[in-house]
Length: 348
Image 1: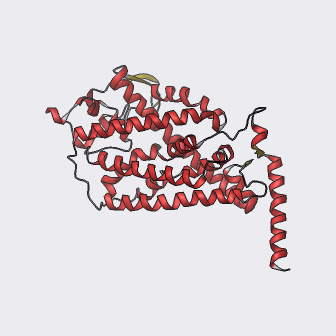
Image 2: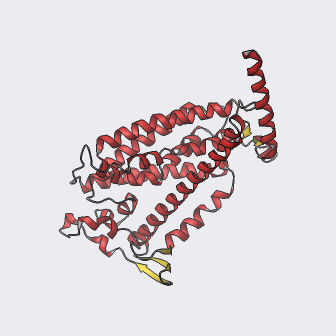
Image 3: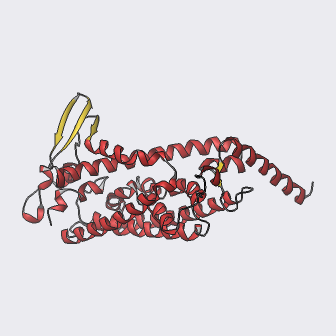
């Protein structure tokens, strides 16, 4: 069989596989949209906000600690490497999805793993689907925990003066957390152990092995409804969240400058075990790419959105990570807990 005939046979087989798979699950954009409305309604701003928000997530909160442990140079090299690899991978993945017959304009609503199923086969599809679900699960758990801890800290530090939790294990009881230990301010002569700085400001640190906090309840009430609709239905929230993120990062930058940078961060650290995991976790935005492709407007450039979003996120990682790591002796795995505590807010 000639190369031309073999290529034609391959294309024909791919078209048949695509038709079968699409008939079983994936749908066209127009079939999911309301009558008279196109599902492809995510513009440039919404696209940029969506991808950036998927980058600047819970893993970013661990970057300051990573700078302290691994050192400035290894973390910068890791961020630069993953920026190139993840963004290039996202653009190539988009090209692959576009190569599926009948999907040049991304009119088919293909999931992340459906592309593997059509192009490579059933065995790879199962493997890709398994990894996809694990990745989404890890991202969701990390995001929920980080958001809940931060909300609890904000409630206790600024709004209510305390926050509550219901412990399930080892005992079943209602407990209260106060931010008193976080009031210690070295700049005002109030001493606190540097080795326990982060744990002092973490709500319910060490208060049981299983508990439900007020922050978890509020996080669930806020985000659960948004997870039950189409991606385009959350774009307004994505844009608003991006705006809030810009404001908060600006505020935190000012607060860190006021606090000063008394901590020495080494160029090369001795603890590199978490480097690959934390940096890689910050560039897991590719799981959101297939859904975005199916719902973005036709004029939105895939390359422009992915490269610009990833670049802005990388700059945020570097600036936020270096400044926060030089400001706190022990920043902890969730830097937002410290930044929303009275240890920072008391400077105002």
